[in-house]
Length: 159
Image 1: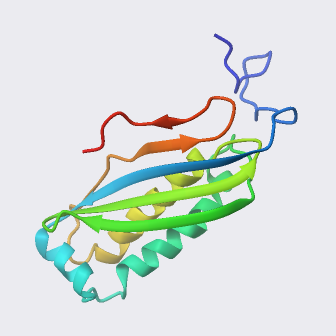
Image 2: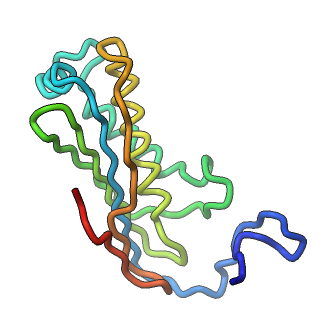
């Protein structure tokens, strides 16, 4: 199997996508922040001292998706055409963050979706760390992708 991110000298390279076709591409990623029930209740009630946790996390996710190529060395900078971040919870102690990222381009947006939900989760942690320092982030994973040469992907189960 050819390793696409290595050159003939075995060194890392950014893959040349010049010859790839432009297609509509979408990726959906998800992560979770596990916390004490009281921490989740305060987030939902808007009683966290630093402000509206979910609003700030949503903005952080959008900003992070747009800057993914600055964080991940071999990612191509992409013109994103849409970013949507949603939050849900289990009514107890888990906050779920899902991000959908879209583009029309020559390479996919999986890394942008994963970066978006990761930044949102880190922002939740940052804004709530005074309430609880032992929150746990993850698992973080790709839920689905569409478009491109490799075709569509969807996880087989979503707990």
